[in-house]
Image (spheres, one colour):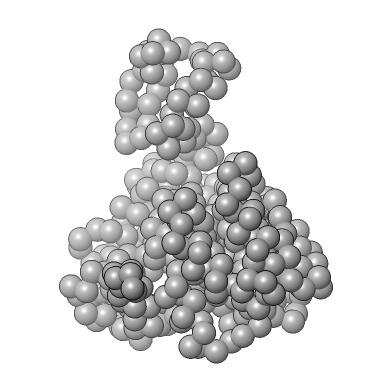
Length: 168
Length: 149
């Protein structure tokens, strides 16, 4: 930013505001330079908003307290200061999927990480992620990945074993 | 999702299967660019060619002449340049043992080839959408496993 002489302020996580109008040439130069660091510019307002929704959902799913106490629509509406209908509309327009689907995706991702870490039992993981019981977690897991949590665990374990096989 | 197109590469030796696949992909909402190769040797040549841009997602038939899908899978996963490539096995086989073996060897997705066009469309929509989420949400690709029967 300094090299391009663009005055800016940092307004949030991964978010900056450039204090003057950026010429197309400078924009392209900035984008090329950022890409070298694998940083992508999101500038379409709907895409920017959708990213904020995703960030809020991830924050919600990875909270330490059990998710049972949180009502998604109220949480997101409060966090993003917009009605849930508005939020859901933009989100599905940009991502071709619903907020509920995305939440389940993130919950399954977290379940995978917890399974790999091996510190919690499936019962504890189910509770943390607000599934009624282990069967419910297993069903959602299988519905989303086609594999049971145990099959998943087995595959990851076998992968790690084959990685460290010494060359003959 | 509204940004660049998803680049997909299909390796399948069967003409009809390739056409079936292409027609189904064309009906999926996400913008895609599809490249096709006829067998494993062509596939590895394509991927190892530094001039061509790597695809985001490769669909790999297991039963191919010259070089099988399994051999390609092993080669791809032992090449550090190709580590970000998402691999979907696309096969007529539905045996659990084979499926688990491909996951252990590094495949991300396993699809048993359906006979029904609508079913294939739905499967591809699901796979592509999920892959996009991994791509755009920075999720851990090593944990990306999807089994579709």
